[in-house]
Length: 230
Image (cartoon, rainbow, N blue to C red):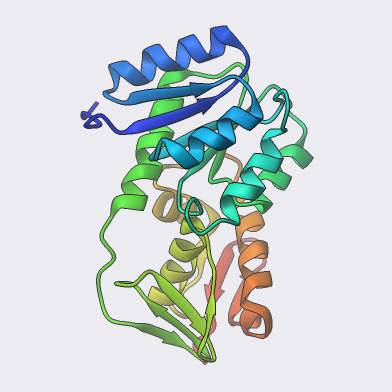
């Protein structure tokens, strides 16, 4: 694996053995590690340690992980930090709620440290990839890749990094159906090692933020999504 150049990953987890396992694996991959054993400390370190990535357990003392995720993703200073949820819970509602709040990925315990590292690196590659090209337009929707901004009828719309990449991908391929598997590969940065319903969750959230312009994204039953040509 390529070196990570000392980039800091914050692990917010109260199970010592899980922290030790992740710390060992991530340090071998070249990352610098910061840890917090409860939600309040995790939130503070997310703001002070300038991490490039956060691994966040959902079940934490003092403040639950979902609340931390909600706070970080609603703050412009921390909104762009990718968050991977880590939980022993397998219930779909927990995963969906976390993704709805802006989390970028999730892993359920027990997990493979190698898979976690691969996912983290894929997400970081996506986040660091330089946005290129001219503005993209689709009806009232305008994307400025260089500024990483989206506006609808001249009004700025706040999108997470994943939502921005998803919308940009659909706009770049306007009129062409994009399968869920292809979107997982191109937007998330890896093959479909997570449930393709993750795509549906993010499309649903993106549509809500687009408001009246949401009908520009068409669902193609049994296949995926496409952006209308007109």
